[in-house]
Length: 103
Image (cartoon, rainbow, N blue to C red):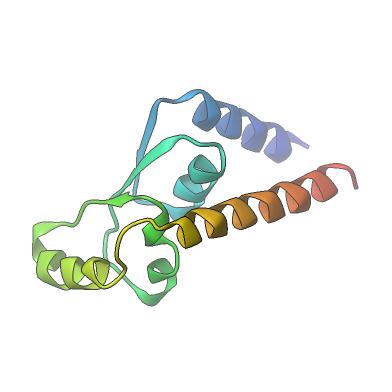
């Protein structure tokens, strides 16, 4: 129960923030779902992050800059299709979290 209360406190903090700056997908994705602006700073850009980075602004470390920029450029900008995808992910996440809380 204590972990659930801690998670709730973190979510409330993210929801009330004007901006989230993080290197963790576990902080960036809830921020997107809560309409909080995100700057994502990946320690390294790997295959797990590629599917998600088009949801937020990304800053790369100098050592990975060229590799990171080329991957990001291939993603394009947020289109209506991506915005719709964000809404679908957000709605699904909300359903899952509500179901978890109510069990």
